[in-house]
Amino acid sequence: MAVLDYYGHSTFGLTTDDGTRVIIDPFFDDNPWTEVSPSDVEADFIFCTHGHFDHFVDAIAIAKNTGATVVGAFELIEYVQSQGVENVHPMHIGGGWDFPFGRVKLTVAIHGGRVHGEGAEGFTTSPAGLLFDLGPGKRLYHAGDTALTMDMQLLKGRVDVALLPMGDNFTMGPEDAVTAIEFIEPSVVIPIHYDTWPFIEQDVEAFAALVGARARVVIIEPGKGSYEF
Ligand code: NI
Ligand code: MN
Image (cartoon, rainbow, N blue to C red; front, top):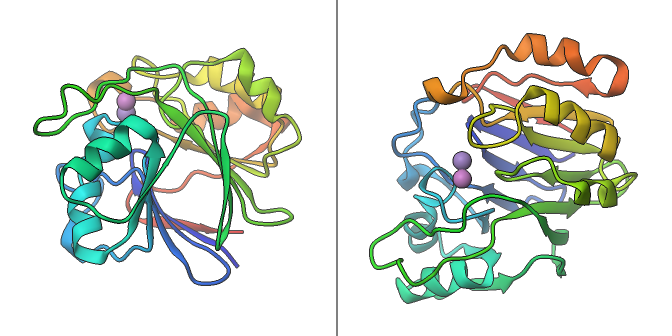
């Protein structure tokens, strides 16, 4: 059994079948959805889709607290390393790696590449999505922050559970997210990156209605729920 705990926005805790604790896009401080403090987070791995603060701000602190390995695009990881984090794993778009808990591939995301952090000005990178293969029925896609892309057609038949931004303004909005679902054909869609701020307010129930029979939409109350698969 794998468990996804949703802390709101794009932040998840993923516990895999073998008990590995993965944090995706650590945004705890200043995240209005969660009371969890970064100092309370347990992790073996931290995956960051990109360097914007709302996906990355607590990565270094959690890594230093826990000894977790930070994984992401090369330039982002160079910055993490420059801040004194020893356990890192740089990757880049299109590349995959067999981690002890499963395979992870970095996918294309169209978005901004700036890295937020002290002294991070020289570390601009390409944002990514994350494709976790945790076994049959457990292929998990975290799209990161992205526009709708034609590249999503490459994911068709390769995703069971898709975590898709639909907040609009900074990422895909609801209509483009529906097209992404038509491209990818996942069984389950969990909407993310909405309602955190006024710019990304959405009616998530209306989004589920718009998706209709294309996929099962699982709405997790941000910061309060989890999904088992
Ligand atoms: Ni972003
Ligand atoms: Mn974001």
